[in-house]
Amino acid sequence: MADSKQTSEPVNFVHQDEIWKAHLKVEKVSAEVWPKKWGFLTEVYKEYERESVKLKRAAGVELPHHLAPTPATPPQKHIQVGPSPPVPQTTQALIGWRSAHSHLQLEKYGTVHYGRRSFMKELGWPLGACS
Image 1 (cartoon, rainbow, N blue to C red):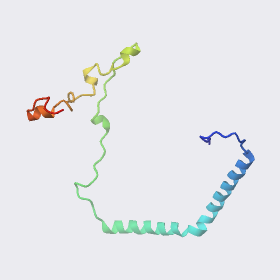
Image 2 (cartoon, rainbow, N blue to C red):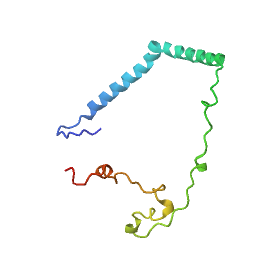
Image 3 (cartoon, rainbow, N blue to C red):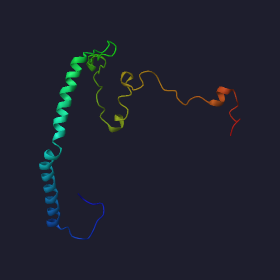
Image 4 (cartoon, rainbow, N blue to C red):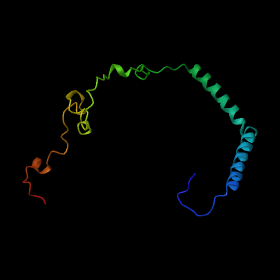
Protein backbone atom coordinates (compact mmCIF):
# COMPACT_ATOMS: atom_id res chain seq x y z
CA MET A 1 0.00 0.00 0.00
CA ALA A 2 1.27 3.43 -0.81
CA ASP A 3 1.63 5.86 2.07
CA SER A 4 0.32 9.37 1.73
CA LYS A 5 3.61 10.62 3.18
CA GLN A 6 6.56 10.49 0.83
CA THR A 7 9.78 9.46 2.56
CA SER A 8 13.24 9.53 1.14
CA GLU A 9 14.22 6.35 2.99
CA PRO A 10 14.61 3.26 0.81
CA VAL A 11 12.15 0.40 1.30
CA ASN A 12 13.63 -2.79 2.71
CA PHE A 13 11.75 -5.44 0.72
CA VAL A 14 13.37 -8.34 2.64
CA HIS A 15 12.18 -6.89 5.94
CA GLN A 16 8.66 -6.37 4.51
CA ASP A 17 8.67 -9.99 3.30
CA GLU A 18 9.66 -11.25 6.76
CA ILE A 19 6.81 -9.29 8.34
CA TRP A 20 4.39 -10.80 5.81
CA LYS A 21 5.65 -14.33 6.54
CA ALA A 22 5.19 -13.75 10.28
CA HIS A 23 1.60 -12.64 9.71
CA LEU A 24 0.87 -15.73 7.62
CA LYS A 25 2.41 -17.99 10.26
CA VAL A 26 0.23 -16.46 12.99
CA GLU A 27 -2.87 -16.92 10.80
CA LYS A 28 -2.01 -20.57 10.12
CA VAL A 29 -1.33 -21.36 13.78
CA SER A 30 -4.56 -19.63 14.82
CA ALA A 31 -6.55 -21.65 12.30
CA GLU A 32 -5.07 -24.89 13.67
CA VAL A 33 -5.63 -23.99 17.33
CA TRP A 34 -9.17 -22.59 17.02
CA PRO A 35 -11.04 -25.95 16.77
CA LYS A 36 -9.27 -27.24 19.88
CA LYS A 37 -9.98 -24.09 21.85
CA TRP A 38 -13.42 -23.00 20.55
CA GLY A 39 -14.71 -26.01 18.58
CA PHE A 40 -17.32 -26.78 21.25
CA LEU A 41 -19.25 -23.71 20.05
CA THR A 42 -19.99 -25.35 16.70
CA GLU A 43 -21.57 -28.37 18.40
CA VAL A 44 -23.63 -26.16 20.71
CA TYR A 45 -24.88 -24.15 17.73
CA LYS A 46 -25.85 -27.29 15.79
CA GLU A 47 -27.73 -28.55 18.84
CA TYR A 48 -29.51 -25.21 19.16
CA GLU A 49 -30.59 -25.36 15.50
CA ARG A 50 -32.00 -28.89 15.94
CA GLU A 51 -33.99 -27.85 19.03
CA SER A 52 -35.23 -24.73 17.28
CA VAL A 53 -36.60 -26.78 14.36
CA LYS A 54 -38.30 -29.19 16.78
CA LEU A 55 -39.95 -26.34 18.68
CA LYS A 56 -41.19 -24.71 15.50
CA ARG A 57 -42.75 -27.96 14.33
CA ALA A 58 -44.30 -28.63 17.73
CA ALA A 59 -45.78 -25.15 18.01
CA GLY A 60 -47.43 -25.31 14.60
CA VAL A 61 -48.35 -21.64 14.82
CA GLU A 62 -49.49 -20.14 11.55
CA LEU A 63 -49.51 -16.47 10.74
CA PRO A 64 -52.87 -14.74 10.32
CA HIS A 65 -53.86 -14.11 6.73
CA HIS A 66 -53.14 -10.37 6.95
CA LEU A 67 -49.55 -11.04 8.12
CA ALA A 68 -48.79 -13.83 5.65
CA PRO A 69 -46.28 -12.84 2.97
CA THR A 70 -47.75 -12.11 -0.43
CA PRO A 71 -46.13 -13.50 -3.56
CA ALA A 72 -43.92 -11.04 -5.41
CA THR A 73 -45.39 -9.47 -8.52
CA PRO A 74 -43.14 -8.97 -11.53
CA PRO A 75 -42.17 -5.32 -12.17
CA GLN A 76 -43.38 -5.60 -15.78
CA LYS A 77 -46.94 -5.60 -14.47
CA HIS A 78 -46.57 -2.10 -13.00
CA ILE A 79 -43.84 -0.48 -15.10
CA GLN A 80 -44.07 -0.06 -18.84
CA VAL A 81 -41.04 1.35 -20.65
CA GLY A 82 -41.61 2.64 -24.16
CA PRO A 83 -39.02 3.17 -26.88
CA SER A 84 -36.74 6.19 -26.57
CA PRO A 85 -36.73 8.93 -29.20
CA PRO A 86 -33.69 9.07 -31.49
CA VAL A 87 -30.48 10.44 -29.98
CA PRO A 88 -29.64 13.99 -31.13
CA GLN A 89 -26.65 14.44 -33.40
CA THR A 90 -25.15 17.44 -31.58
CA THR A 91 -23.99 17.66 -27.99
CA GLN A 92 -25.92 20.88 -27.48
CA ALA A 93 -29.19 19.17 -28.43
CA LEU A 94 -28.31 16.29 -26.12
CA ILE A 95 -29.04 18.38 -23.01
CA GLY A 96 -32.66 17.80 -22.05
CA TRP A 97 -33.56 15.90 -25.22
CA ARG A 98 -35.68 13.37 -23.34
CA SER A 99 -37.57 16.00 -21.35
CA ALA A 100 -38.76 17.71 -24.55
CA HIS A 101 -41.22 14.86 -25.04
CA SER A 102 -44.23 15.07 -22.75
CA HIS A 103 -44.48 11.32 -22.19
CA LEU A 104 -40.82 11.14 -21.04
CA GLN A 105 -40.84 14.05 -18.57
CA LEU A 106 -40.05 13.45 -14.91
CA GLU A 107 -42.88 15.71 -13.75
CA LYS A 108 -45.70 13.30 -14.57
CA TYR A 109 -48.11 14.75 -12.03
CA GLY A 110 -47.70 18.47 -12.80
CA THR A 111 -45.17 21.09 -11.84
CA VAL A 112 -43.97 21.54 -8.28
CA HIS A 113 -45.10 24.76 -6.57
CA TYR A 114 -43.10 24.61 -3.35
CA GLY A 115 -41.81 27.94 -2.10
CA ARG A 116 -44.09 30.04 -4.33
CA ARG A 117 -46.22 31.37 -1.48
CA SER A 118 -45.53 34.39 0.65
CA PHE A 119 -46.16 34.32 4.38
CA MET A 120 -46.96 38.04 4.37
CA LYS A 121 -49.49 37.64 1.56
CA GLU A 122 -51.24 34.88 3.49
CA LEU A 123 -51.58 37.18 6.50
CA GLY A 124 -52.68 40.07 4.31
CA TRP A 125 -49.75 42.30 5.30
CA PRO A 126 -48.01 44.67 2.91
CA LEU A 127 -44.76 43.27 1.49
CA GLY A 128 -42.66 46.05 3.09
CA ALA A 129 -44.03 45.46 6.61
CA CYS A 130 -41.01 43.45 7.73
CA SER A 131 -37.47 44.17 6.80
